[in-house]
Image (cartoon, rainbow, N blue to C red; front, side, top):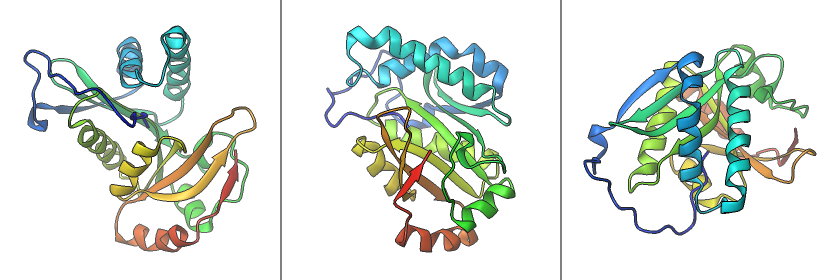
Amino acid sequence: MTAQPEQRQPYALRAGEPATMEAVRLRRLNRWPAQGLGEELADLYLESHEASVPAAYRARSRQDFLHRLTGDIRRPGFAMVIAETDHLVGGAYGFPVGSDGFWGLGFDGAVPQSIEQLTGSGGVFAITTTLVRPHPQDREVARRLQERLLSDHQASLGATLVDQDDHPTLAALRSWGWLDMGEVWRPTGPTTFRALVLPRGERTAARMEGLAHDAWTRWRG
């Protein structure tokens, strides 16, 4: 999920840019068109992270993003939804979580049985990245992108990881119904993440309710 800085400069609309959501179109892409959008997505990534990426590290940050995007595109079932007007304003992408491992990212901890069952049936979709151009309604664009991505895949459960220091994004996700399931940390990096899931449908929501009140506190990925 894209980090949203605690405080931002007021956004100024571009000439001809819509002030409301009605003009924003959502469009689904598979891996080949998504790969062709790599440079535009990298520009969007830097713009959305402008406050948190020092100028001296922007080139490296851009390359790291493109490397991660390439890796995600290669995963089975990869899909992307973009938001656009006359230019790209946002995008969200991810892939189904395979039955051979939660997140498909080398996670080796104990996964709650209810999530294991959903994963085994192909009902879990991991949203690895959500990018939105800074705008007064950027969070509404992000919410619509995620909903469309999960709906297109008829997912029973959405899943994502968020930097635990990204408090605005965590607050936004929780307000949309995402449930915080605990910490995830990886020995290869300094960042600690929060694992969140979004139940879709009454039956899945009921199965997740207990986990939300008794979340496991640490996964080791």
